[in-house]
Image (tube, rainbow, N blue to C red; front, side, top):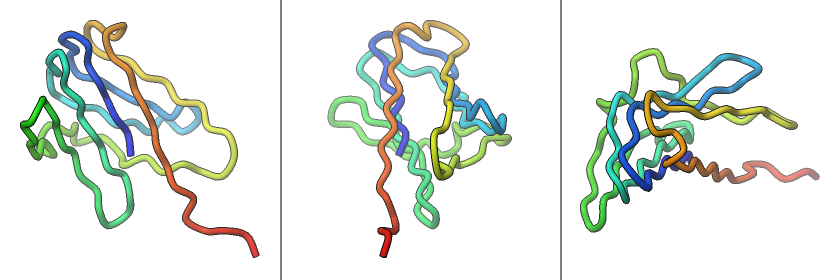
Length: 102
């Protein structure tokens, strides 16, 4: 799960896997206090906006060239940016280990 959170207006946020060039880009202007959650879990992919009590499906704001990033084994370098006001955005990534060793 990838969380894009805006403290002020942020335009077109992007999260990129530095090694592969794969990215997730939102063609959307986030407003102050908005969090957009990108669910990259296989079979449950989606993009949801949260502004206060308002919840909206915003999958149509996902750039058509985007990939639903999957975390490979080991360290991964990620980079985030935006078309404007990137310093007003935080990106949080939450993941769950699917398999435990035996």
